[in-house]
Figure 1: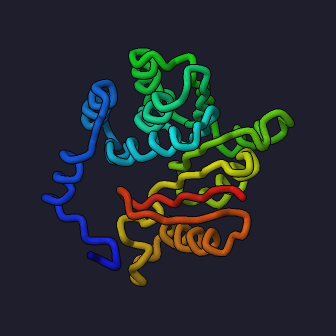
Figure 2: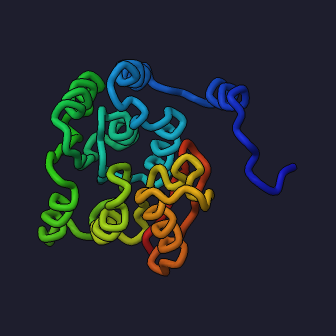
Length: 221
């Protein structure tokens, strides 16, 4: 028995993946293709994608939102877990990286579920909020983009989420830097404040789980 989360050694991580990861072949191919690209470290871990897919299925979600798509691993994980008439709205700035995502969405047979919106995410979110038919309609949201703008993304996404909907926020541990007083780069400082603000946010139910680089789960009350 343990009263705290155990440390994840390389050997234990390998065991975790070997014992539980059921990665579809199309996701494995996408992960392999992305590994050869610049900024490959921006891709989420496969066990994280599987965890998010399970959350989507548990919620019986139909409508999802993603801030930061990159080459599409997270959005594809979510899309595969959604029902046939499900929808994923994806916000990103890069035509180059999202072109890879679109290729794999097509290959996976989920392209009709995907709504890619290129441009500054805050502008896209504001436009969606201005559309009275969008606010309060999303079941699930994933935030994994510019860390400095996390507080702004969060507030807008919370508006777009329905009561009982779930926000998943990536990289909230910043490689452990949030716990190191000597680390004070802008992104880490913003993340520390962001984590504190969410702990005190009465609008949500909260859990920060040590998967990958830390995932915050925030359910809108």
